[in-house]
Length: 385
Image (cartoon, rainbow, N blue to C red; front, side):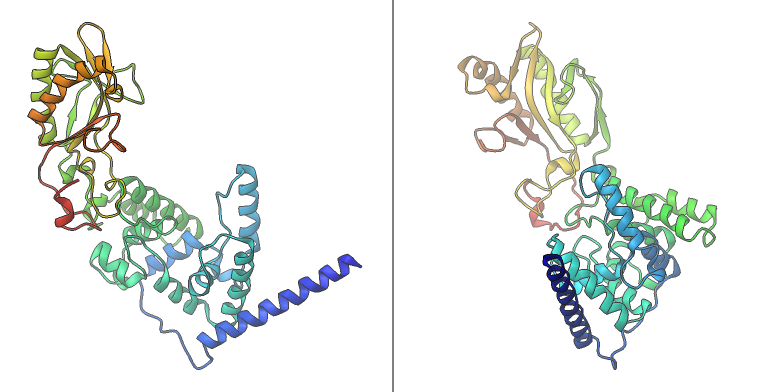
């Protein structure tokens, strides 16, 4: 009896959900309303379907095979590593639901997807999806994204451009575009295009799209080199060894350093070696493509290779002192003369004295130089980082 009641309740709830989904979609898309179908390029159409829902034309809103495949992958991984949502389900979520990842929202999403497929054609669903999806960097919809990233229109998108765009959709960047993210997204998209549309593009076409340098066609992307981080500091520089915190026992080179930082650092090392017997630097790194902590728009000097975080010093007598030990008089006495030299050689020094919360264990040593504008920033926001 209890099982029968539960079954009736489930069926009743499903009917209610279905009727509600049909009513919602009908109110927004009455029979007299047709979704305008803008012209888009063939490569972008293929990239969207291949990346997000390869079986889009073979289901009616819900892809049982994709759900089963995602369920198996998630169970094997012990966490959510795949999603089984179709393009129609994603559109339903974007139009009607929140981003809360709950079972109830998923059920609603499925019913709405079925109702959308009942009300709209496949091409209309694709059009609405492309016009509502987040392509990162504040760009919602393909028209804005194509203009922002490539200064072109949706009907002119090439295979390489299309692969980059759809590659951003799974995890849209909001502040920074990184080479790894762009490259990984592009290669994944091209692999899926080859799988779902095996005869549509030749090996040479896909190869050209894979190998085209990002900086040659992704307009807002500026790699470290174009930002001025073009130098490298060897593991043994100016007779001083460099130890990264992750490999504290093995000296190693520092890549992506701006010429300005390298010059200021060399001058500091010469004085510190002669006056304080410095033979080694412990550091937290130089290049780090991120905004200043606590902000979304102020680019860190590390994003330009113009700052190094020094967390310790090593001396010719075999001793070592950590910046984090500045509270101990003996350690502070060893740090003090080096701190004076740092202020002499770097325009900006931030330590526990200025920012105890974020710089308690290192000296942030920053130089000035040419800084390109990064998406999401302004000239005024770059005066201090």
